[in-house]
Length: 354
Image (cartoon, rainbow, N blue to C red; front, side, top):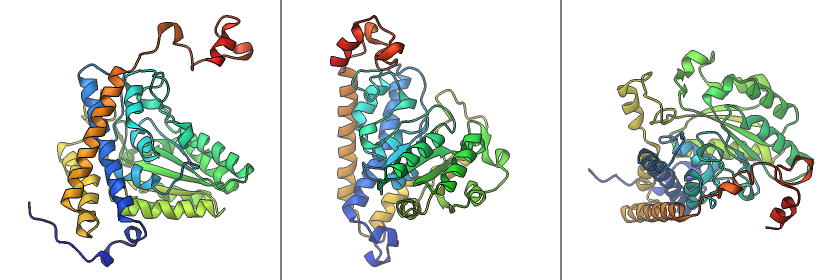
């Protein structure tokens, strides 16, 4: 392969010039980490080491990492059933995510949540959600809480194209706009809600057009181009922090895997998948960083080696961690205090102390 021609650093997109090159290289590392995390989880599933199902976001890494890059630990996100990238973008530790996949006590939800329900409240991740559109009203509630407490924080709400036809979508955008709440709605439009194409399910050509009905800005960006997503995210976050209310950012992207592990992909062609594979967001971002002199081959190799070491350590941690005891299965699932306590009298206080 011919080496990429290096452009003048000053010709880089303005959004790149606003950030330290080390931060951009770390963003690339996170994108690669998301990809390798999901590929490794997929392999473990195929080997029978992980049970249930999972929804992979392979091909969507730019929308998750670029959108969350400007957020702080004081900010919140709500996620989806396809939310592993959101978790890592918000600072989740892959080894605890692997442990959650494996159903181990060291997982983020003590092994009770699995792939679709990872939460990390300490870092502002209010949790993934298996209900289509389920995170939208939660995000609005969190944003209202921020407003009532006069805090300088925002909420970023991720959802897919399938959720834009749920009632919760319209109710949430309406309330957020009426109250000018600090929430950024990020639609990851990967073209399909399960097997239903967005062209067949949605009347408008761009989901961001629906923002106009709720008097908020709406923008559609190339969800596979890191710079475009980051620029739109920064503008929406600045608007929310400034008290001007919500925005809708639509990231047009594509999931290269099926809807879930049971999807046979009979509703789309190999030619379509190959065309989107050629627009791989990781390859595009890496090439851009190299073109503008923000990354060299040695740094790229070091990033990948670091990611592989982190993945191996994470898998080892998950496999060696303890599984929940059968006697403790309902712990962290049902309340342990008050009249709703589901365990014998006297045991609640003991477990609370534990």
